Image 1: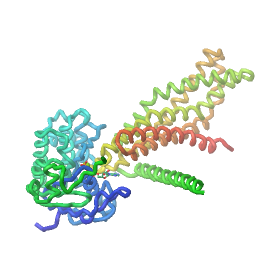
Image 2 (image 1 turned 45 degrees about the vertical axis):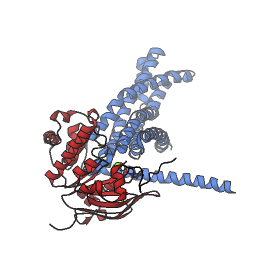
Image 3 (image 1 turned 120 degrees about the vertical axis):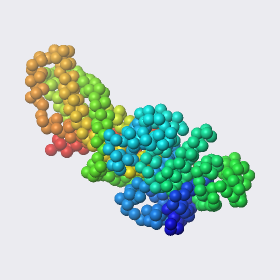
Length: 257
Length: 261
Ligand SMILES: Nc1ncnc2c1ncn2[C@@H]1O[C@H](COP(=O)(O)OP(=O)(O)OP(=O)(O)O)[C@@H](O)[C@H]1O
Ligand SMILES: [Mg+2]
């Protein structure tokens, strides 16, 4: 195997107005591995993923997937690149005007990979992969619990078998057992597809379960990178404070008194 | 001096803002329309929008039209009593309904009913990342959400107005014959004599324009809404207000085009 990373970010910068959210991100993710990104609320983790997906246009920097800078591609090229990325959104973002099975099969139908008649059965197969019964397919997203919504979102993300997967806080708001179940599903899916993954999480247990490597985002920069197993004893003061949830430390929460 | 400069700056900023908004809107409309000519086409989304804009608006538009026709007959009979009331009432009802009140009333009703719902639906999709999700699933949101609605507005409203025309004239007929005691045969004869293709067609063209405006405003404000439930609420209000004002403004412009000689 070559040493070329699957995803390679260099100097990625994004500001909203005069608020700098990403300030020169450099990050490599090797093919077939999972990268966990941690960082405080509002540190720009979701913006980072949306930049890679092309949903937000960065101000500067490069995003290479398989060595191709996708920011230099035209519209059609970007659409093509996007076909190989699956995304689990932070709040699910299920289409609430469509039943669950159509949500799951949406990407396949859009890419004309399946006929509409066959889609229902294929959706049932994908739902089974995330541990949901066939009958769930006929429900509406609003009829699902939070955990089920995450699983449907996961099913939708993996349905087209993408080689890159993004997970934005897959376990936030779930009970610890359901969190572990979702983590297990994510690891299974990533392994089965051989995909490259970036996962955002606040949950250290989850980070260690999902990730091969981990990176911490603070003030728009990557301040630490290492093996995910080292998260709890990284030797980096900022990471330590974050992972152990201490109030005192180098990171000062900007609270208005 | 400073106050004057401030004032000029404020006015300037407002004018610039308005120009920018008009530019955005125009680009949005053109992009939406351009997707009608490039595959893939979303037939289901189009049919759903037709159902929503056209079929489900039928009751409101029908009621409005009947009452409008009834009021017209009643009002005009008192006003025209001194002249030739019978032919005058029939003439006025058929002319006002087909040229003006049919399209305008239907347009305003649909703006309130459908424009609001559209802005709320698309706005919710925006603030809950569903529009981003569409993009990640190889679907262009302008093509999937906006284009079918624009087309449906363009087609559904003329159909609605055709119904409104018939019911409006019927409302006038009912009041004229049952309440005002005009002769049924003569009234009908007058109505048919005064009915001009040009009036109906101009009304239908207006309707197509109004339908397009309602869909455009609903989609545009929904698509660009931000900031949670409050943002969606604001988008809904803007969509209805903007559509209503534009309907009346374009009504004037189109009337000028059709009838001012
Ligand atoms: N479309 C946008 N327009 C303006 N500002 C934005 C936009 N999207 C994000 N931001 C800002 O960028 C910052 C980072 O947002 P982001 O959603 O990436 O945070 P996050 O790290 O994912 O936080 P959380 O863990 O709470 O999800 C926030 O301060 C937010 O206000
Ligand atoms: Mg986030």
